[in-house]
Image (cartoon, rainbow, N blue to C red; front, top):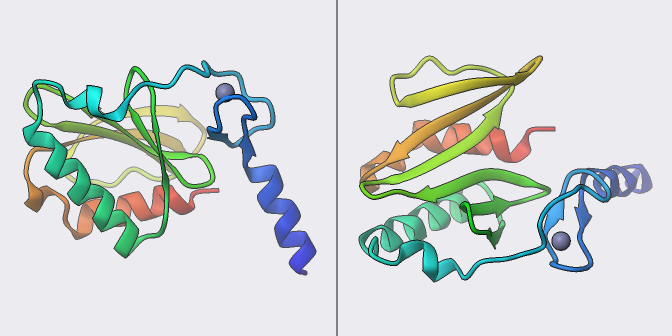
Length: 145
Ligand SMILES: [Zn+2]
């Protein structure tokens, strides 16, 4: 039984030997180029604290994760990327995949990726935005198979 679980985990995640990023599929194509995390916050320093708050909330309420900073955005990775954070001028914009569509006005945009896979966009402008609703979605994204 334990073996089976381990095997499953192995299939569910692959670490690129070059850049150390984790992916769902073995040999998944990507750019190995990483990008310094702090560079995302240049001129947008006020969102650095908000980003830390989000990270802390995820660690305490959901589980551990790793940060992959790439040029386009900041990926939070568990077995694979479960949320991508983009530092905008006036907010943090996050996107995450779920197998359902929450009906909530906070979801800014939803893109259907495939059968039962929806990518959702949510803006975080203040600490209060990191609330139970948001953490529930991120938890579902974190554990999404
Ligand atoms: Zn790589």
